[in-house]
Length: 96
Length: 497
Image 1 (tube, rainbow over the protein chains, first blue to last red):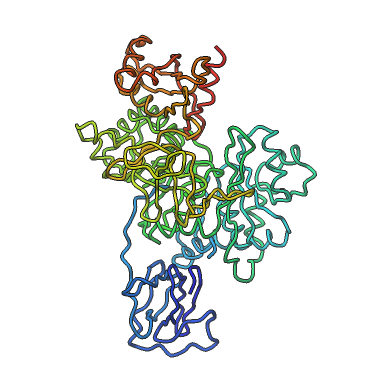
Image 2: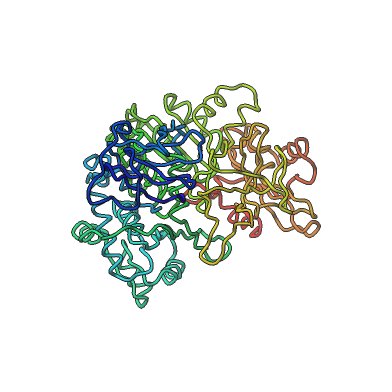
């Protein structure tokens, strides 16, 4: 997963862009994400159904993966069944 | 990654929310994206190599910027203030281009280069009507090309890739963080990096853009009050002119104005102190950046401003003259002439590294093997990591083999109560090759200090090599429209006399 790569959920509308990546399989709604959305949506795993929020960053505990949600959906993100956490923004004053 | 992601996300989150106001017309994020997609399909079909803007700021700048990104064609905003011969040379360097704006001028200056010419109104209309571009936008490439001002040689074509600009925005702006009634007053010209960054940052924060096509202080005050602007970016000259109007009695209520950011040139300490007093509730941020770094790389935030303004300790007050600390996403180093890093407190050339740093020109990349960009700006870091600028590295005065930074002399001169503004430049010297010349502006109602008094001040505070051979007293120093001191003009003064 190289920075800039886009992935789509197979189970909901979620789309993400990789900000920092490593070689892992990303899941959304408990189902692996892919380059394209399948013609038929996969079933959403209720354990991974908290939803994603557009503009939020999500990271794993080790901080080796960081994703930007570019489109919101009903599923939530995980790697190997471990949920990713939203990252707190450290706001900078606007300089433009 | 493609720069259009910024507008796509805003339009995805809230398509009906107003994102841009210009000349009374209000554009939603959805309408802007739709126009950018229409523009992209026309750019793509036209076979041009560039999308150029030769116009003041308007919605056309945003539509062209994002449309060009979607089509994978570099967007090149051109400086409409350039003289005919200089503009003609740039038009030839981007041919064939889709040119938006002053079509008559392009027809006159570069009729045979195959440009496709569109007035602002015609372009916006065709963008709104055209079918949206199909398929995914390109993942890499040049998003924006900006010609540097080129004071000594031909302007350089600085390239900003999608990844540079997006890294800057993703690293500094929290998506959709602006409350719905926020509005950012944008009055910098579209051909300046600050003009591009203002569009990108505001759209990603979902802060409504209030475009002022050409800066004029009364129009700025009227728009700020009428649209209840919450944020604004100005160059020091603009802030000075706004304060003059306030002092002259044009004082509209600006209770919504939460934050003013400034940059693009040296801010006189007196001016920022006056602004802090006039706008006690407003957050001030000083931003330092270059075209080649995708805008801001260091900033002095509101808390730094307030504590420096209230401090009595000269060291703490001096921080108002700093450009602040590096962004968390970039590294800054000060190096000597041989490229060796210098410790805090020592002056040298400012080097910067980070994903937002392009350092790339059409002709060559200026990055070193480790990815550091030599800014050609001189400066130093203090013990707490605050960056101070000391002019351009090229402005160094070489007197008998000794390097003298104009900034150190100017600082001492500005500490004199009668001196409102000061510039130190190299003047020809038979004995030393170069010597120091100073131009000063006297602050009324003070008397003009004698040459001897100024020379003694510098001799006492610095050393004898810094003492000026020549002293000129001016009504005002020459600045360009972005507030940059035109040192070459000051140098000319001494050559002429």
